[in-house]
Image (cartoon, rainbow, N blue to C red; front, side, top):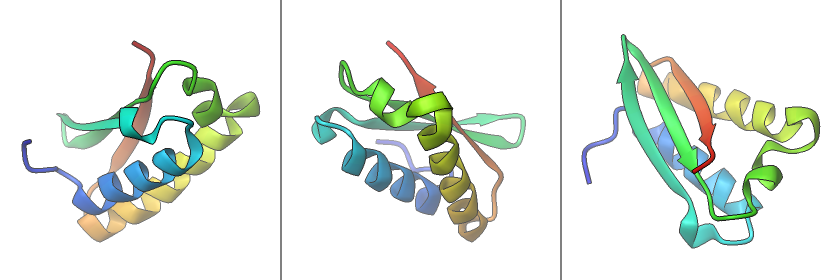
Length: 85
């Protein structure tokens, strides 16, 4: 596994998402560099994407806010994308 671009943010994101979903072992977080902004892509098991996004996207927005706050410890700007495979 490659070294994370935002280790604290990625760790927080993984922990939060795993605590929400039915299949925590299926959670995958990948960090990408997009012109200076770190993008954390989240993939979850089948049927769990709705749980992570929540009603009207409220859960996803809350997760993004927490992860952005954690990213200040990494000294980077992050965005979180929830990917449906």
